[in-house]
Image (cartoon, rainbow, N blue to C red):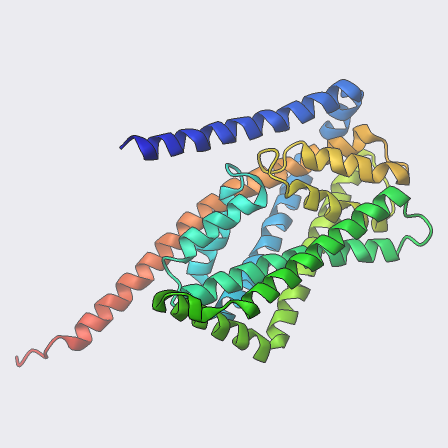
Length: 336
C-alpha cells in the first residue's frame, strides 16, 4: 500500500520542484530587467482584447483537436469527436500540472487507450500527430527565417539548425526502429501488437494526403498562435516585423518542451527574450508579452479541463443511448 503513495509523493515533489524552477527563472528575469516597465506593458493590454485572444487560442486548439482525431483514426482508433475532445482537451489540462507538453501527451494516451478500438494504431497516430506538431513549428520558424534574409543572427540560426536536425533525426530513428524490429524474437502477444502497429503504418502510407492535411492544419494552428501573440505585443508596446515573431515564437515553444519548469513557465519567456534581442526587442517588453501569453495558456488549460469533462459526459450519454438501442433490438417483442 505504501508504494503507490510513495510514487504519488515523488510526482508531487517533482511538480513542486518544476514550479519552483519556473518561478526562480521569472524572479531572475524580474531582478535583471526593469520591473516597472514590465508591469506597465502588461497593464496596457485591455481585458476585452485578452478575452478575444483567449477565444482565438481555444479556436486554434479546436482545429488541433480535429487534426488529432484525424491522425489517430487513420491508425484505426475510431474515436468519435467527443472521445477525441476528451483526450485532446484533457491533455491540455494536464500540461498545467505535468512537465511540459510531454506530460499532456501522457494524459492523452492514458485516456485514449481506454476508448481506442486498436491501441497500437492509436499510439502510432498519437506519436505521428506530435511529430507533425513539432514539424509544423519548424516549418513556421523556417517561414520566418526565409522572410528575414540577412537579418538572422548567427546564434538564432544555430538554434534553428540544431532544432531542425534533432526533429529530423528523431523522425528517422523512430521510423527505422519500427521497420527493423525483429518481430520473431517477441512473444505472440507482442507480435500481434507489432503487426497492428505496422498495419496502422501501412494505412498511413496508403493515405499520405491525410498526413499532409494534418501537417497543414498544424502549421495553421501554430501560425494563428504567432499572430495572436503579435497582437498582444502591439498593445504591450512591442512593435516588430511579423517575420521576427514567426521565427522566434516557434523556437521559444520548442525550448519550453524541455521539462525544466511547469508548463514551460519562465523558460518560454527567457528563450523568447533572447531570440528577439537581435531584432531590437527590449527584453522587458518581450517578457511582458510572454507573461500575458502565459495567462492565456493557463486560462485555456482550465477551460480545456471543463471541455474535457463535458466531452466525457456527452460520450457517456452516447454510449448509454447505443446500449439502450441495442438492448431494445435484442429484447423479444411483446405479444400484446
